[in-house]
Length: 488
Image: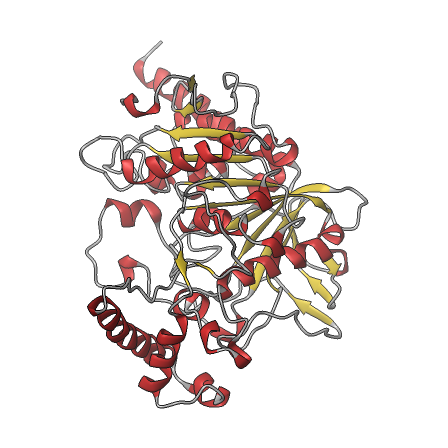
């Protein structure tokens, strides 16, 4: 066979391989058949092929520094076919004056509108509406620490492919971030008494919305998996410490986000009072506080927190006003996976893991910053002798860029969205093959609490003796020896 004929045949075979793994798109329909009923009113999405899609559904509302409340009931039909805005935040690095890099090119972060008043929204993908079928529900908490990000700031966050492949309901969630979601005002008491961990309260509110409404979207409120990567993994870990979330979820996945260090609200009154002083306001001046522009609010919190930190440190006390979760004793309770696993979520099976390189792109060495936290979290979960925990390490590296198995590389694989982030993974046949296996493992865990699937070796639960760890690569395998000597 001539060289040109060989090349043509290979291209045809490779094209068929990609086509067989690509999701069906269209036709698009948006009419009476795409309306779902919630306890607050009717919402209309659209049908994309065989997937009903709803974007920007409001699940709660909240005034500044106040806990979230249920959305108000409405008449008529709300159109939910366009993504809602994200919480106010500093822009993603590539939009903030940083030179473009392979990381920027690979991840293709989206530039989105921001709106403090309308950011408590979620998105739903499902195969059926009111069809009597109760599908397992997969709820995604986005990354970006506790300061930035959104449910759609990466192309691969689209939930369509998982919903179609696994016949599950996929939900992605926006919530308050940074100073709006994690500046603790509860120490002031009065109207601020419940103003702790507001971003986490938002996420619990989204789970309450799912519990009340997901049946009408073809979902099962008694089979809900929460998952997240990086800061999203930290949010999953934190929800597992929240008594108010008990019964609202039944499995959990933490990807490169084994967050085990929490602040306390011991000094929250000092920080909150310093903020009010900086703004020239009193605690009962709700209108004045709400009128402060977001950028001015951030500036005032940063300035006032530095002053309080210096004062505390001069007294030999720990500073850190913080803009992350705190153990407040009501919404978030100890322990937090640092010494032992939370009792409130003892019966929740977990997947925990990290990537080989994370932020160590160039040396090719294992990045211990995330790995050690994952091992610690999996160990205390296993020693709890409750539901099982499954450990993984993502080792797959793309050809043609310097990212390696970097922080977030696994996202397009477990979402089965290789085609949506080709700049990251190269969209090679090897990438598609691994995505098929990894997304199948995630789907099986979402459905049963056990990730074992065809195409992967037996995935045994983790324990402190064997440390069973699934290594995801072109040739995946289960490692049962000491994790610390894994080499690539």
